Amino acid sequence: MTDRPTDAGSRRTEYDRPLEFAAERARWWLDGVAERPIPPELDADAVKDRLGRVLPAGGEATEAVLERLADGVEPGLLGIGSPRFFGWVMGGTQPVALAADWLVSAWDQNTGLRFATPGVAAVEELAGEWIVDLLGLPPGSQVGFTTGATMAHFVGLATGRDELLRRAGWDAATDGVFGAPRVRFIVGAERHGTVDLAGRYLGLGAPIEAAADEEGRIGVDSLREALSRGSGPAIVVLQAGNIHSGSFDDFAAAIEVAHDAGAWVHVDGAFGLWAGASPRLRALVAGYEAADSWSTDAHKTLSVPYDCGVAIVRDGHALQRALSMHASYLQASDLVADPHERVPELSRRARGVPTWAVLRSLGREGVAALVERLADSARRIADGVARLPGVEVLNDVVFTQVCLALDEDAATEALAERLWSDGEVLAMTSRWRGRSVVRFSVSNWGTDTAAADRTVAAVARALAAVHTGEGATKG
Image (tube, rainbow, N blue to C red; front, side, top):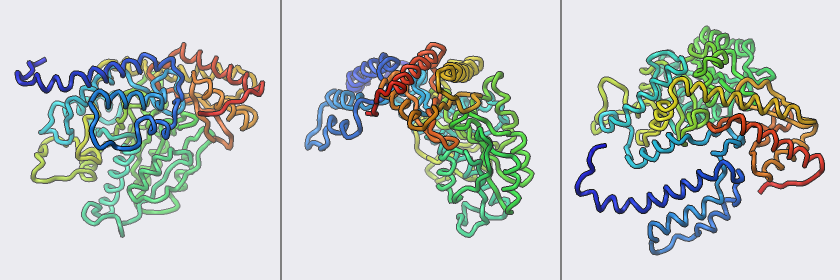
């Protein structure tokens, strides 16, 4: 560590007490997150009341502001960091990632230009290179760190749209997209809604659906038929990790069909792409390296803080054509793409740094062990709840998703409400295969055998309460 400037004393004093307070409250929150009830105690309106709804004329002392913030907000927080949180695909935060993220905030670097902020740019470049290598994707693929998986989809789809139009003789950067050849947007019937959202942002319109099988995998014959119904440019989105079943598309077959039709292939791997980092689970993504772009979210499976989507594009030149901008006051890199040329933002924090910290901390074997532990925990939960009376596990549990149901929708929903009321385990209801389901998304780095067994026991208690008619309401 280099010596601090000799005149930094007064500035450091200004930061010391606020940071000490924040660190103490953060430790308190983290110390209890694994055991306190997972649902929030207060709703948003109650939190606003506690914080004070009217902006005062005069200011408030720094420590008083922070105390008001912590006291007001903490009762309204969801225990996402709990190893028994399965409500959505949210992974909590590993300690090394949290500490790295604090450094990112303290450094306060605008990570758009490689020349201006070489330290954090170098970290993100290494993290991107390691991700490409870990996942077995094409060497030289370019990586951008986005706000989340939605904008990672956006990056892949924007690059695909502009590249397809360029091949058709249309320059989207100069002429826009109004009047351009239509780009067909083809997806599986069970894709995630964020794919549609990213397509909407890009003017692709409502997607064309190809049928999916009972596990949510795109039908290769249906994809072929959808591509044959029209002509001209096409983007095909495939899926690594269905949100209900955790299933993976047949990448080798589907990509061959899509590429034979001249389509750009994007893989939505928000959580499932990380299966490629495990030698044991890599078969789930066999063939996905032949795609043109991929998206994932390091917060989900890798457990880094929000926000940290990851966009990966095989053709770096196409990526830069789609997203870059230049101005005389920006000292752009001549040899290597600047960070801002890989994502939609010019100004942003160094969000890729915590990902580097986790990768460096775990190493190749540690990342594989993390992914496998999540998959094993899902399998253990599925096997345990399947032995409970009246519980049916609806999906083939191949990765980290478990969907269960009781005989009637009302009973299934009552089970989820009972779990919410109990607070030890959180799993949310959804609709799948025309039925209400309780969906467990195993994404937290701390979920292990013990957490899985406690989860099964909590489901058994909730099930017993449902059978005896005990009521439960959310809130």
